[in-house]
Image 1: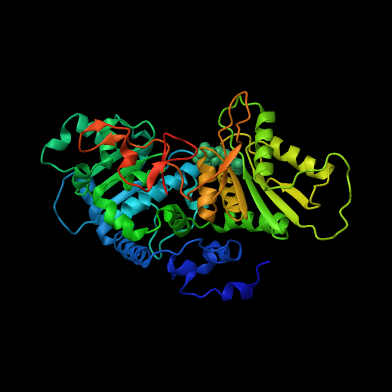
Image 2 (image 1 turned 90 degrees about the vertical axis):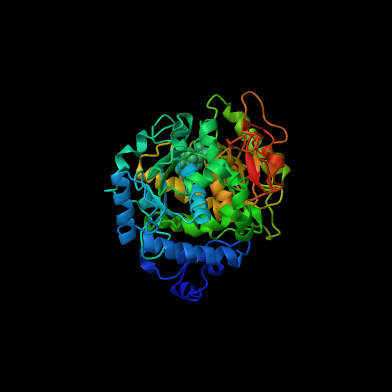
Length: 477
Ligand code: GDP
């Protein structure tokens, strides 16, 4: 239960060990403070370098954010289309909304880290529910790109073939002439091509550094590839001495549920989770619709049994445990479908467990399919990712960014279920993740020095390795 007193004992200047800034109106975003009463706090200590970097960023954001004098001047520069070496403008990275909510959270984090590394100001595309899901993360000045921003109507149509796309310009030799454009579109989605991938090369970064407005569209967590750019290496080492904490820290810094989402989270938590001795999260994401649901169920149960996450049921002799020393376990399941949770709930109702422990199984919603454009659908998705992050032990599904956000935010090393495959139950059913980081599913396999596509990128730095759930992907360890 959350009491007024509990909230007051959180020292004002030390929210999340200094990770979060102060100076917000507390009632406008209750989760910023109250979250400490639900989660276990940070699972690692942020470096003082990261904390001072964030404070520096906030000062820059305040100077350059929407409708400041510098912002207005830089917008005018874009309208005129003229490059000017005028140093009295700000540089921006504009995050364009694209893909499911888990993906969006990961790409926003990637864009923010890029902004930190390049002294740019991050402004976000306010369309597709974003302001209804997340509180403003930076004090005083908004992170939302104003709706009267000149190019906003064109965001949806930006693609690799747009004349303003960096890849297109390289292909057509436009970057070779001396004129620097005032804005550029960067296509960093899974289907990017060789020229788009040049974004991850130092020489191209030198060019991009001069362009005031960069618009980015992606559906991938491209943070691991930023670690492969030599000129960012030192700064990244200073910011993140422990590499597996990047999303854990930046996610906790950026994403605070709005009061409406916070209501979904806290009501659910208090009704179904708070009283349990142990909370287990199970996130089920089935990408291949042809997969037999009985196999999915078998794989989930094989994992929870083998890894001792949930007690087995006693099918033979239903006995009543009289020792009285049983614990109650709340299982929070999330899935688009209700079938797995219904089966598991019935199993624990119809049979006693061998340990005598009492297992309650709950699932907040079953939305059937992705409906990103609907506000309540997105709110539920965000609330469920967050609720999963509040559990003690977490089982997630391979390849799912929804699951990545949940475990990384919570600082929980999950048990990851191998991708559900048609016709079989994967054996082993799951594995314990070694790193808290999300996986980058479609990395730019390109060797900047040799100017060739190369699959040996992972040898370049020791803390970037293939993902455990996707051997094509890259992940920080
Ligand atoms: P990914 O596709 O698993 O990588 O995750 P995304 O979050 O990017 O996209 C999937 C979208 O489908 C989510 O954002 C939700 O809109 C919806 N979705 C998938 N699984 C669930 C779930 O367990 N609960 C809810 N409420 N929505 C889900």
